[in-house]
Length: 394
Ligand SMILES: Cc1cc2nc3c(=O)[nH]c(=O)nc-3n(C[C@H](O)[C@H](O)[C@H](O)COP(=O)(O)OP(=O)(O)OC[C@H]3O[C@@H](n4cnc5c(N)ncnc54)[C@H](O)[C@@H]3O)c2cc1C
Image 1 (cartoon, rainbow, N blue to C red):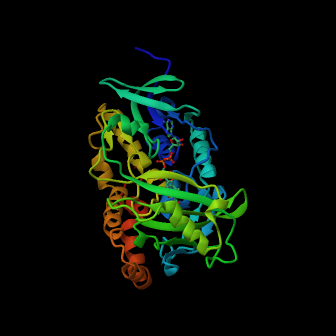
Image 2: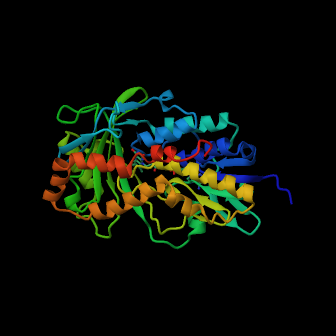
Image 3: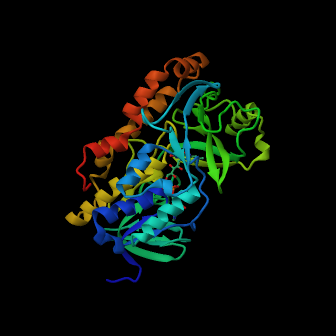
């Protein structure tokens, strides 16, 4: 039977995971480009709450796709500082790097990615909200606010509140981190922070918040700003003694700012759990919908990395005419991306459990050299490790 609204592949969500899946498909199986539809509920450029910290892993994936992020406004962050109560260590993601990492604003970054996908021939239909999906033996029906679509394969790249995920895994424990964010003017007089550096301060851990407060430099419409926020991974079951809002306000007070002067926004992040499902017959999850970094909530590079694995699985499914995606979870867990995510979830559960201030002070003030080494060896740098042991066409 032929349907007007029939595509072989429907990608739900035009964020980094969805667009990366598309761009990798264009590289791996160009014949699938015209048979793919991307559905996005918003219209670009759209607001996306995010610190915009872009690790070199993201740039490795983008370069693999022939993309150069310096085409859009960005800040080269000089040093990333990891502190407990304003004292600790500093590092750059790459040992001999010229900068720690970059920051971008997500409305610009995501719109740029969407433009690249359109240039490569993808049809992206915006203002289309997916309400649900129903998979049967021969196809998947995607229900939206603009009608029904029929397809062979759906990629759920629709973020942490994924509708696609809920359709294939209806009953599961919530594995979500909580984040609050504000954008402020550049460094106030009272702040000891340097405008060129980014700061992660774990001072909130003794109060039961399993994360940190952050302060990044960024460019908003050409003007320097600071993006500040608080991250609570929520990986262990104990509850914090104070609210995230109160903890962030306290931190801002140390820098001469008050939360009441700014627009506060919050959003969850679904963190990676190796025991969870990542696919069902004819359906794949990617990016936050699949699960991301529990340790720092660093999800842009991860979303881009998932796109590559999802595209490989789709190419193989069409080659073999087997749409079960039964090997997708294995491919994630065996990839350098999956190994790094497993380690980050494990470390988050372990590290955020220790609330003692002397322990936290010792970690960041005395163990800096070890942390920098371990971070590069096991937790970041996965994209380069993946490149080094994959044939060029993958
Ligand atoms: C406050 C905050 C700060 C963060 N800071 C950083 C940081 O500094 N660095 C970093 O690496 N990561 C950061 N993250 C995490 C990062 O933003 C996410 O991991 C990343 O955006 C995941 O990309 P994604 O493509 O999976 O999902 P998203 O970026 O959420 O994209 C999903 C897309 O799907 C669309 N969509 C959703 N539902 C539907 C639907 N039903 N139908 C159609 N379309 C739909 C959305 O509009 C969106 O465009 C932060 C997150 C938060 C909340």
